[in-house]
Length: 311
Image (cartoon, rainbow, N blue to C red):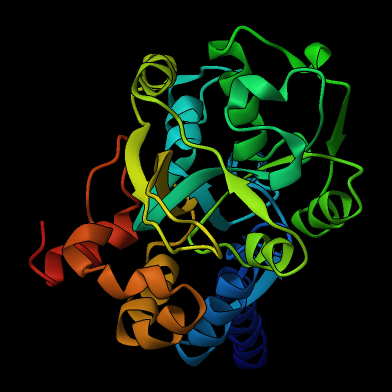
């Protein structure tokens, strides 16, 4: 009888250990190669490993990541505040409310950038009509923003000569070879992909005027207005106004509280490692990370921020 009890006790302990190990393995969805999310995800994986949390880094995109987390196909991921809020509200491009997506940390601003070959004659987004453009695959926030930008200019993809849904890297190659004349993307500044393009050709960065920004803001109140300062890119001699939003880290609301706490704590304790990937994060404080952006806060994050006395 005692032997049976011992066997049962060992079995229970083994099952508990297995459950704990599974709880500590996290699938983190990032972004396309050529952007800042993919390497940032790798840095978070390294940091989390020191905290005892094994992270598997997967490629992804802003909208796709929210959908994957909602469906349980991922545990954590990067999101864009505007599209995550759309998901929570159940607005397009989401079919229904994403009620299992929680905020972990607001990280840094993202800029919707519109770049054209200087010899294309494109000086305004309106000039894109009849041209070949390169945008990200569907599921990317910047691709959806491109659709919205076309809308506020009274256009659709049908008004373009050609629309290519490709990665940042492929988009740059297309503009270098003049197989596309305009490229849209959403990332930090300076974007490595635009710097790559500027090393091969003269470029024009397209500004979004106030009336078009207002129209975009009417479509999504989460949009903000930021300036890409003159000199950010080669031969950029004036400030460029852009539509912006925030990158944040999200997680399944039902992901273990302790797991999220450990990942977040590791990120804050090792922020220098993240700054090396996304220099814009040098301005990010713990208080900024805890800001309410209209997405429910994960319990693990709430516990951490209360300990830090920032909420």
